[in-house]
Image (cartoon, rainbow, N blue to C red; front, side, top):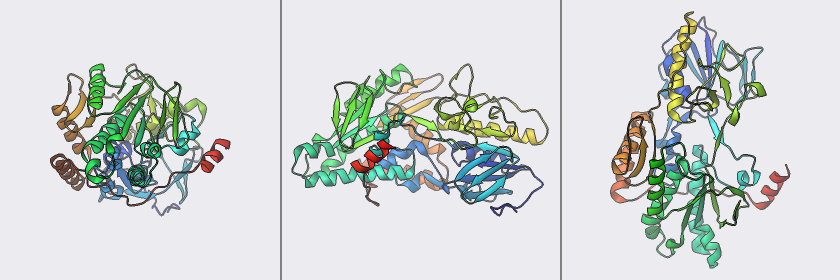
Length: 438
């Protein structure tokens, strides 16, 4: 037995760190093969990150987009899950060191995913809001609702406007989708929930440092998304870089200043690193691990990386594949097949990414879709977006619950999950000052 109470086996032990899209896809591929699979994650659930913004804006409850990892792989032989924080990788001793003990591996797969990248801006990190996890999304939901409750109580018009002013930094899919959802709340829900508050004064500002939104998508998708947002009343600011935020005022590299109680940072992500695999020679831009075309981390034959944490350089993707769900799923499946070949003593096959396109929704009946051969926008794109997201949700119950919620929200123009389950308190200036000194 290891210190995690995992029995010894004649099968090679494959340890997967991370229960995201890549880790789950790999575990499924290995589930009925001659390998002992151990999956480690600091949460006991897999969450569907593309819909986190709907949790933040009250469209869905978190259990609609989360699924127990143990249930995903229930009944699979030789599979073990442990709730653990990975502290370090001992590459010499082939051990994973965690807060619940150490465990040896024959093969190790790093699938830790990504986290918010503040690009060294400690002020924004302290006072701004991120939306990469379910707890962060619930915090944002509480803050949004608390701000409107607070706006009712103040006689100071300046303060009231700041409480109803939202600044979203980053014009990628997350920023665009969140801005669209907030604009629809302003239009259809706030006037009914707060009839004694002039919610017309609420402002949604989307700030993009580049010259267009959705830079990873086509020009037509970018232009259409911007037009959709402006039609919803969103203020789109391009070629502006946010410099700092002190909890009240957002400063930029221009004369433009925003007074707001809520800044949402959606301007970048970086890979979640692990001590022991942090040597400069194996790290690429964004803290990603350099891997070859078989997903092996540079310099190691028995250590692999997939998903957001992996950077596989190709002619089509010189900076690595997009940090999205589809590459992670394909890489997980590919590595699963290669590991079976490796265990059987057969040569591995290089990974080839099949780009299935990208999409973003901008609100009710509004979406943009870029497929390899077709590009379309509007109502049909919105239905395609809905179908794809329902399809990739794990679990029959989750698909049914999300579908029912979406149908209800569409018919009633409502978002019933606007609940302050756990109040959120922003850090104060003293916390900011301490962090800035550190």
